[in-house]
Image 1 (spheres, helix red, strand yellow):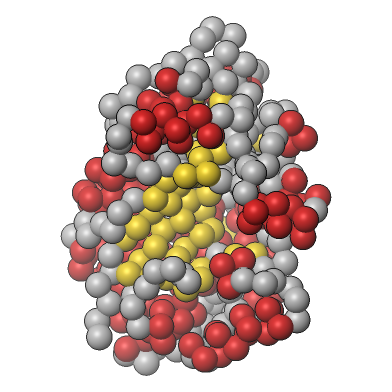
Image 2 (cartoon, one colour):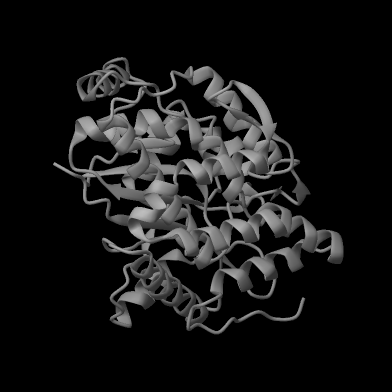
Length: 377
């Protein structure tokens, strides 16, 4: 059966105080306000009370994705504004201490805190997950096998978390540096087939590493709830257009890898240890240095690898008619820098992390129907 390659996007957002620009624990109020307003868009809790999450419905085109994200971000921003807060889309908050954040009072989150202890307490991070509709589990594994080598590039392109705890961390994606400490996070292994995939997850459960398949947090995984391949490596995108670009790129990658699989093109057998190191490299340097070209096993300039990647996924972009939309945003990032570079540019200009938050809030609301609510600092 040919996959339908539908798209679903999940985004996690920071809730910030419009006066101090600090994180604020108002998720319950936002969700209650949204329900009272009878808005179709659902807003849900995340691990901490200073965060909320949205998920789009099933989308068939990038126009669908854009419309869904406009609706979602508008609903979240308006709910925040009614509760004296603002919304920021970035992988980390530039200066709010993790010690000040409250865990959302839910059994699942309490269990994670009890199990992972200090690591989970410090995990004030926000991501973007893109689901691609692939019902055949065997084919989903083969798509994962062939997509995994591009994970570092996808991270570098969308990195959006250079600041944390009031400092420039030196990373473009400090979120990934924090996230990869979890025992089941990181690039997925290479699997022979779906049975091999299931067997390894069962081993993780049988040995007590985890108690639930949904707590296997690989950067690509087969969703336990939906017939999808879920790509989880990215920081939450700064703007709607970047999120649309990411969705288009990932669907084109899944389609191209699907074609490789049915044409018996073997996956490049990169070891998980090498991929983990390459993810660190991408998180550290973003597009500013070199990334590994796994076809040659040699480092190349990141922007050169982006061009190679775009050529590789061109059949998928063409198949869905997404070339122009995706290429325009990719070119913009190559020219102006990724979101991490833009955050640093704001800080260099203003010497103010509050101004960085202001820019994040502004970019988060681009294309929405919401009006910003920020006070002078």
